[in-house]
Image (cartoon, rainbow, N blue to C red):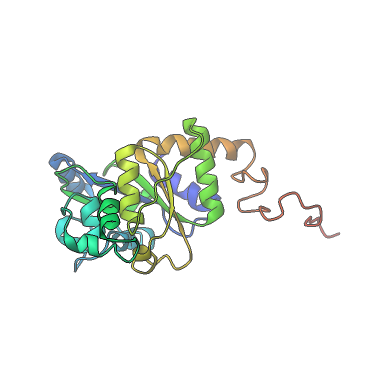
Length: 258
């Protein structure tokens, strides 16, 4: 099944509001050249902005977005991507979250961080990346029940239990993707203070991030459940979200009108 077909199934069966975002961290120039030569249309930031704003173009507008270091104006993301060393401004930026400067410095130092040499990053709707690149991560902006379904399918598909997401201060979208890529582990985390406004997550979306190498197995688990009953885990047979609320309540029942 192509990524476009998988995206169509995910949008329909999980009732996603946003396109799943395929993220690619380019370290290889040949891969980057292939991407530029084959992508139908690539957009780049006009001014430096945040990584979660890059993803707006992909998840809301269906655009293929690419940028190098010059298009990233967020210090948190620049640090996580290995494009900025630890400095006083980064520590000061975390003082409002921490007890003191020592704790702020220690917390920043423990954020996930890409290895040196990152050339650039592409974010695109999952359905548009066929023949362009294999995603390093697949990032979902979704609600609580959609996140739960993805988490349960991941646990079943990868035989992993329990899950232990990684939440860092002020770096949910950027640090969350870096953690998943570097550790090859599922991540589920709330919007940070930056991505809530800058990344436009005022609907209360939850971040779910799946390693690209494991994504097809997770999707296959969803497809197997659809083939057996339906995409709803909480009440198999109903469409998702179906009757998730009060799932076994005998009062919420409907029958054909004679």
